[in-house]
Length: 103
Image 1: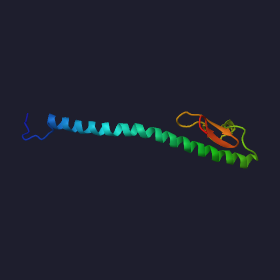
Image 2 (image 1 turned 90 degrees about the vertical axis):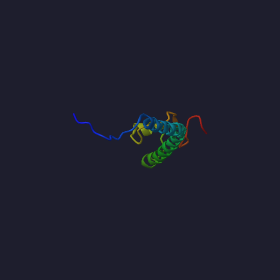
Image 3 (image 1 turned 90 degrees about the horizontal axis):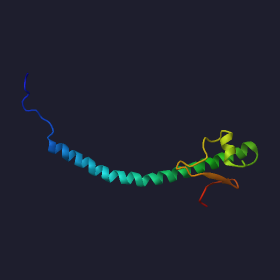
Image 4 (image 1 turned 135 degrees about the horizontal axis):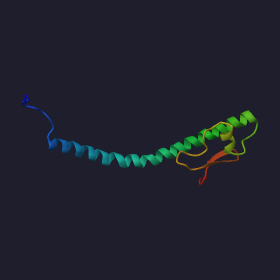
């Protein structure tokens, strides 16, 4: 068997320094991602409300009157869901889509 001279590789100290740097970066990044998750869910709900409001208007144009509830949009295939991405429910009040628990 031949022995290769002057092998270059990482020492244990170098690997530990790399792992330390990765750990510090993760400690900085993870809390920011968790904090921004709630913002993303809120924006997702706003987008869902806007989409449903547009579909209410489309329904009104095609049928001549407003749907009695968001279930009408779901049953007739205008939308595939009538809840926000975070699970909060939406309702139709006087032709306006509103998130339950908000005004």
